[in-house]
Amino acid sequence: MTVYTASCTAPVNIATLKYWGKRDKALNLPTNSSISVTLSQKDLRTLTTASASSDYTSDKLWLNGKEESLESPRSKACLQDLRQLRAQVEASNSDLPKLSQYKLHIVSENNFPTAAGLASSAAGFAALVSSIAKLYKLPQDMSELSKIARKGSGSACRSLFGGFVAWEMGESIDGEDSKAVEVAPLSHWPTLKAAILVVSDDKKDTPSTSGMQLTVATSDLFQYRIKDVVPKRFEEMKSAILAKDFEKFAELTMKDSNSFHAVCLDSYPPIFYLNDTSKKIIKLVHKLNELEGKIIAAYTFDAGPNAVIYYDESNEQKVLGLLNTYFGSLGGWESYQGETLPKLEIEGTDS
Ligand code: ADP
Ligand code: DP6
Ligand code: CO
Image (cartoon, rainbow, N blue to C red; front, side, top):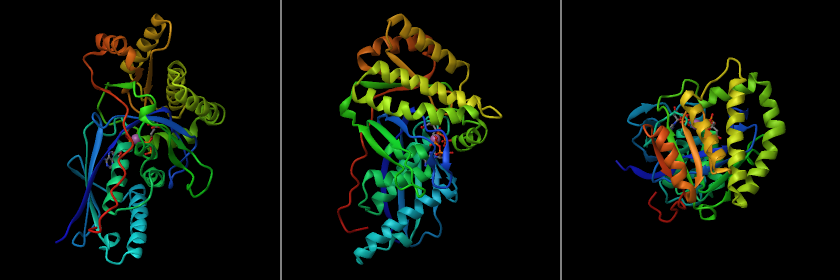
């Protein structure tokens, strides 16, 4: 039996301006644009191998050694889009094997906690889409592939690019303009680093997808956030990044994390992602900035209690020294930014 395979890794990205809310659940279209920093794959990453064979009888996924369903509408949407693009490739070269008609087996592993608020769905779906795109030798660019990854998990669209990334919410009903774009590459600000503190690696009790649905349906504060706060912040944050203005970038990042957790609390019933340790970390970062007389560290928390602290390498000793003194018992990583995924190999005619 012939089995065609391709593997690739994908990084996590941690939003500095949060995506929280969908205007279209099936297509994963957001209620606001968002911005993130892609982290280095040396630390946190997903490794995925996709294989196709005429002998396979169904699509299957093994995640961290356990079989998981690929039957969710979001996974099916990704596979369907990728198969359609592969069918176009096959139509233009009849010598190629008809991989678009074969079932897929996907094996994926995260080297960090899954579903704990450390963006596993982002790295996971970015790796899923990239590995299949590589297997299928698709010619599409990253922004095009980001639209497919978006259908798997919204935040995944941003993991295809390195450095600073924006997910432009778009306006169209079909989502063709809701895609990731580069704000600035890793080389723009290579000294910006992230410390990740694992407060808890437990699986969260409210997954991001259902959490944001509840917020959209019940929070009044959320309407204010998406109309009056985020659009302005999106422009301000892009400018701060381009100007390498750490203080401005950091202030906006902390405020947006707080705004996101405020709309979680304003949901009914309320959603709590931060715990007491998270709150102590928030206080410590404010104390550090106060003692310094300027902002040298910024916290942000996704949908979980785990902290990501952004800082410039020039302040590493001060920031990590303090974090270590108070939270040295917590596990974690100290990470640089990541690069854009290497251009998928489309040469060759074997698959
Ligand atoms: P997180 O904060 O980790 O992104 P989410 O609630 O957004 O948590 O998503 C977690 C879900 O993402 C998992 O339950 C799983 O369905 C999916 N996921 C995580 N990692 C992978 C992966 N490597 N491949 C495919 N799907 C994944
Ligand atoms: C708080 O992308 O995990 O991390 O699209 O439903 O899969 P789905 O949600 P997901 O939500 C991420 C929420 C966040 C903020 C962000 O990454 O922008
Ligand atoms: Co997620």
